[in-house]
Image 1 (cartoon, rainbow, N blue to C red):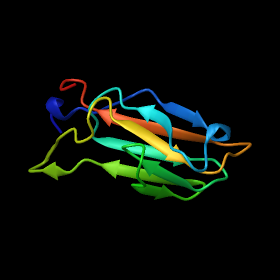
Image 2: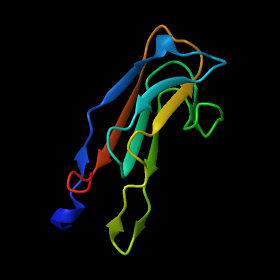
Image 3: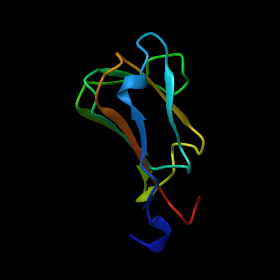
Length: 111
């Protein structure tokens, strides 16, 4: 791996499970940098539906599970596939305990 392919972690974002809504999407995170990898960890007691437009179901995460979204690689080079400012929404049953964690990784030289 060369210096141009350096990857750095963004600050961990979190959203309390007790603030989830069952019928309406809630904004849970927004990407700070164009990212190669997004990981959403569901430690709540509820299954989650994830949306990237706030209106449609795009992904499902069972309770106590993790969703990893990777950028595609071509010829050994990874391109930041997920844009800066991309919003991530979730809906599910409000839980008394648990948190949704969102982590992402980016190239500090290409941000």
